[in-house]
Length: 594
Image: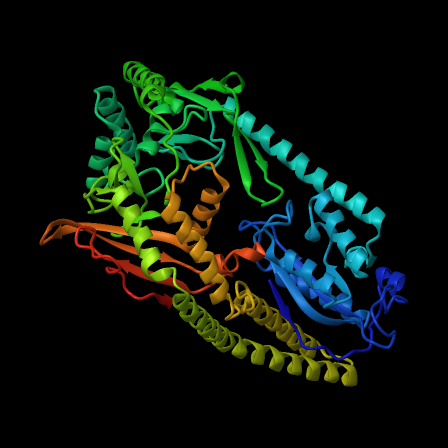
């Protein structure tokens, strides 16, 4: 997160530390940064790793950086912050990404952090940041070093930070292994158990009753959906606190999880089932199942919940179901609107059942009537035909695009006005705090600075940092408006004519192998975000209402290779009843909204 700050007046430097003396002559860093008479523009960066660490670490880091900058006569022009985010990857750190882009763009001369491990805990990311700044003529400084970071610093500190994380991971894993061998908790909570300080595990009696019930009912031949529906109807919370689903009960054989595969219920603690790593391109944690031969097993008979007979019967049924699945489960070829058709009542996906080409609400099917009251099924082919007819008749028309472009620009103007209304008060408050700080600094310089004045200064600076962080948060997620040229309507008309000609001549199959059909399908799917389907009893029997929602922006801008701009207005089309349709009718005019 970032927030531009007004320029601060230059103040006389106080007593210098050893690090200050080492860099006192560097009032203007090397590189093409303008005239030597210009003040050095510095941006501050602060980060703390996770929710366990204290959030007030951010103001403390910024205060140290500000004091360092003031001693060297630098002007703070921006602040970048990452809260509760690890430094092991850069892709999931918006503050660091913004600092990188702003530095390359020349918005400041120096990026200053408290210490190198605030910038990165990964050698690759540290080198990437340093190289990009070096190419742009920018510099990295830290308060701890009191100077510019050179290539050797990047290599040494980057290696040290990454090695620290690797050693920490190894020590954590060793502690988990010791806990596992002692029958103690090793991580996430298992349903029907509670861990105590020190790692001891206790059985939760009320949840243990549910575990035994599930084992007994499944061993007796009851279906997973029936078990889930009955538990949900009774209001029994699932392990996650929500509704029960078949996957919650069966889990994964590879990972050994789920109620029916949890060996702890049979008095055996199993550890080392998965290997954890981090995707450096996204910063997300990944888990990879280990082969069962690498699993570590420890008997814990005092934690047993189900007997040997129930456990053996359930495992036998699971194995039989797994062996039979390939005989009747076939991966169906993708359909034209696969993944886009949703239940209008609850928003869940509509899924095919019984192989008869009919769609039913997936939430209702998995969780029972407590999840969704929609118990109707509809013909997939009817939905596809009606959506295509609606697209052809009304949406695929240049006038619809002209109306969309007009509404798009109006929506962006409204969004920008709302953004200004949110941020303007914070910007005014920030400017006023800067003026107050400047006045206090003048008093300090004139009088030498009493303890009361210095306390007031620290309070105002802390308040300023809080307001700057709030302004930065308000600015996140507000990309600049992207103008859509009105001439796109004519280009759109030509593209749509080609799509319609292909549909008329060849139809559309989602698994068509020819390039022309694949392009047609891709262009149609670009426009559609979701298709809401609702079945009901009408005068002529069962009828279905379809609402088509999406955005034309991605389709209009597809020539540039970029998708829909963030926040682009959407269209909503109401498609008429399936069994009461006339040619060219049954479709409401397109409407745009946010």
